[in-house]
Image 1 (tube, helix red, strand yellow):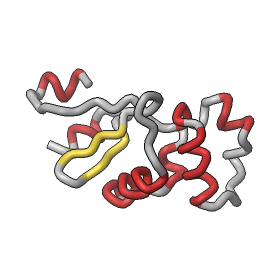
Image 2: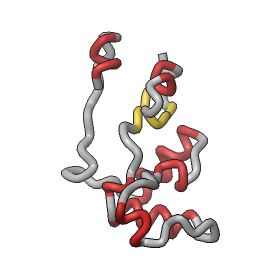
Image 3: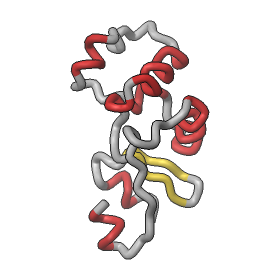
Image 4: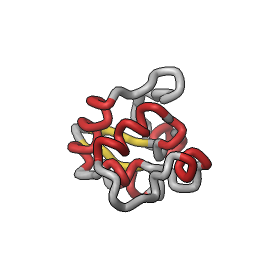
Length: 98
């Protein structure tokens, strides 16, 4: 990520498609970021509509299962630093970690 490189922060990039996140991984990230599963959804993805994820009555487990099954639904980047997690868009979110 360009911002991290500019700030001289070392980081490890994870390609969700090559290294899929498990449900437990997502739950841990959510806790560290005080987020809910719906926060991680990319709502403009075709699979979001096809899987019926816009339904406000879906429970968190259903959304987590969808994120595991379809990594393309994950917001990105997700940045973790010093035990805190933010979704990297907008970029100001990442700056809060410094």
